[in-house]
Image (cartoon, rainbow, N blue to C red; front, side, top):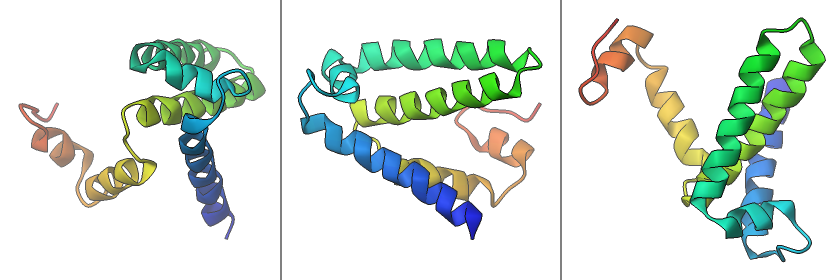
Length: 114
Protein backbone atom coordinates (compact mmCIF):
# COMPACT_ATOMS: atom_id res chain seq x y z
CA UNK A 1 0.00 0.00 0.00
CA UNK A 2 1.43 3.38 -0.99
CA UNK A 3 0.50 5.15 2.26
CA UNK A 4 2.34 2.49 4.29
CA UNK A 5 5.41 3.08 2.11
CA UNK A 6 5.20 6.81 2.72
CA UNK A 7 4.98 6.28 6.46
CA UNK A 8 8.01 4.02 6.14
CA UNK A 9 9.88 6.84 4.39
CA UNK A 10 9.15 9.12 7.34
CA UNK A 11 10.12 6.43 9.85
CA UNK A 12 13.35 5.77 7.94
CA UNK A 13 14.15 9.48 7.93
CA UNK A 14 13.56 9.61 11.69
CA UNK A 15 15.90 6.63 12.13
CA UNK A 16 18.54 8.32 9.98
CA UNK A 17 18.28 11.51 12.03
CA UNK A 18 18.66 9.46 15.21
CA UNK A 19 21.68 7.65 13.80
CA UNK A 20 23.31 10.95 12.87
CA UNK A 21 23.49 11.92 16.54
CA UNK A 22 26.75 9.98 16.65
CA UNK A 23 28.03 11.04 13.23
CA UNK A 24 30.77 13.57 12.58
CA UNK A 25 29.50 17.14 12.45
CA UNK A 26 32.05 17.73 9.71
CA UNK A 27 30.37 15.14 7.49
CA UNK A 28 26.70 15.44 8.44
CA UNK A 29 24.47 18.51 8.38
CA UNK A 30 22.09 16.70 10.73
CA UNK A 31 24.88 16.00 13.22
CA UNK A 32 25.96 19.64 12.98
CA UNK A 33 22.45 20.84 13.81
CA UNK A 34 22.11 18.40 16.69
CA UNK A 35 25.49 19.39 18.14
CA UNK A 36 24.44 23.05 18.00
CA UNK A 37 21.69 22.25 20.50
CA UNK A 38 17.95 22.41 20.82
CA UNK A 39 17.86 26.20 20.44
CA UNK A 40 19.48 26.02 16.98
CA UNK A 41 17.22 23.13 15.98
CA UNK A 42 14.14 25.04 17.16
CA UNK A 43 15.21 28.19 15.34
CA UNK A 44 15.80 26.28 12.11
CA UNK A 45 12.43 24.53 12.42
CA UNK A 46 10.75 27.91 12.93
CA UNK A 47 12.46 29.35 9.87
CA UNK A 48 11.34 26.40 7.78
CA UNK A 49 7.77 26.60 9.10
CA UNK A 50 7.67 30.28 8.13
CA UNK A 51 8.92 29.38 4.66
CA UNK A 52 6.07 26.85 4.35
CA UNK A 53 3.55 29.53 5.30
CA UNK A 54 4.98 31.91 2.69
CA UNK A 55 5.06 29.20 0.03
CA UNK A 56 1.43 28.32 0.77
CA UNK A 57 0.39 31.81 -0.26
CA UNK A 58 1.76 31.34 -3.79
CA UNK A 59 0.52 29.26 -6.69
CA UNK A 60 3.76 27.26 -6.75
CA UNK A 61 2.80 23.78 -5.55
CA UNK A 62 6.28 22.39 -6.18
CA UNK A 63 7.81 25.06 -3.95
CA UNK A 64 5.28 24.38 -1.17
CA UNK A 65 5.95 20.65 -1.47
CA UNK A 66 9.71 21.18 -1.16
CA UNK A 67 9.30 23.49 1.83
CA UNK A 68 6.92 21.02 3.49
CA UNK A 69 9.55 18.30 3.11
CA UNK A 70 12.10 20.64 4.72
CA UNK A 71 9.78 21.31 7.64
CA UNK A 72 9.21 17.60 8.24
CA UNK A 73 12.96 16.97 8.24
CA UNK A 74 13.62 19.85 10.62
CA UNK A 75 10.77 18.72 12.89
CA UNK A 76 12.41 15.30 13.14
CA UNK A 77 15.75 16.95 13.96
CA UNK A 78 14.10 19.10 16.62
CA UNK A 79 12.39 16.07 18.14
CA UNK A 80 15.69 14.17 18.14
CA UNK A 81 17.38 17.09 19.88
CA UNK A 82 14.92 16.57 22.73
CA UNK A 83 15.05 12.73 22.56
CA UNK A 84 11.42 12.49 21.47
CA UNK A 85 10.73 9.59 19.12
CA UNK A 86 8.52 9.85 16.05
CA UNK A 87 6.60 6.89 17.49
CA UNK A 88 5.63 9.04 20.48
CA UNK A 89 4.22 11.71 18.17
CA UNK A 90 2.39 9.09 16.12
CA UNK A 91 0.83 7.61 19.28
CA UNK A 92 -0.36 11.09 20.26
CA UNK A 93 -1.90 11.58 16.82
CA UNK A 94 -3.54 8.18 17.08
CA UNK A 95 -4.99 9.13 20.48
CA UNK A 96 -6.35 12.34 19.04
CA UNK A 97 -8.06 10.66 16.10
CA UNK A 98 -10.30 8.82 18.58
CA UNK A 99 -12.17 12.10 19.25
CA UNK A 100 -13.40 15.12 17.37
CA UNK A 101 -11.17 18.14 16.97
CA UNK A 102 -13.30 20.12 19.42
CA UNK A 103 -13.13 17.31 22.00
CA UNK A 104 -9.38 17.02 21.59
CA UNK A 105 -8.88 20.77 21.98
CA UNK A 106 -11.05 20.82 25.12
CA UNK A 107 -9.12 17.87 26.58
CA UNK A 108 -5.82 19.77 26.57
CA UNK A 109 -4.70 21.27 29.84
CA UNK A 110 -6.65 24.48 30.19
CA UNK A 111 -7.99 24.12 26.64
CA UNK A 112 -11.50 24.96 25.64
CA UNK A 113 -13.36 24.26 22.43
CA UNK A 114 -13.59 27.21 20.08
